[in-house]
Amino acid sequence: MDEATKEYLMGALENVIDPELGIDIVNLGLVYDVDLDEEGLCTVTMTLTTMGCPLAGHIEQDIKFALADLPEVKETKTNIVWDPPWGKDKMSRYAKIALGIPD
Image (cartoon, rainbow, N blue to C red; front, side):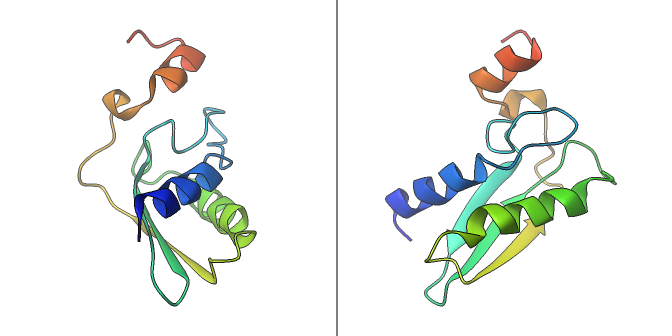
C-alpha cells in the first residue's frame, strides 16, 4: 500500500469521533496503523484511552461505517492493541488545543 492510500484511509478515519472526548480517533493518536490488502481488507491497528473502555464496540462500528463508503474497502477489521500504551503525547497539537491540554 502506498503512502497516498494510507493518508486517504486516515482521512476517512478522522470522521470517527471518540464519544467521550469529542475528538476524532486519528488526532487523539489512537490509530497506530492502517493497511489495505489486495483483496480490499482494511485493517486498523489502534488502541483505546483506557483498557476496558465501554465504548470500544461503538468506535469499531463507527470505523466500519467511515470506511464503508470507500470503494477500495471491501471488509474492515479493527485490531485493538495495548502496546505501546496510549498517552497524551500521542495526541496531535489540534487535539491538545481542543481539549485544553498544554503542549
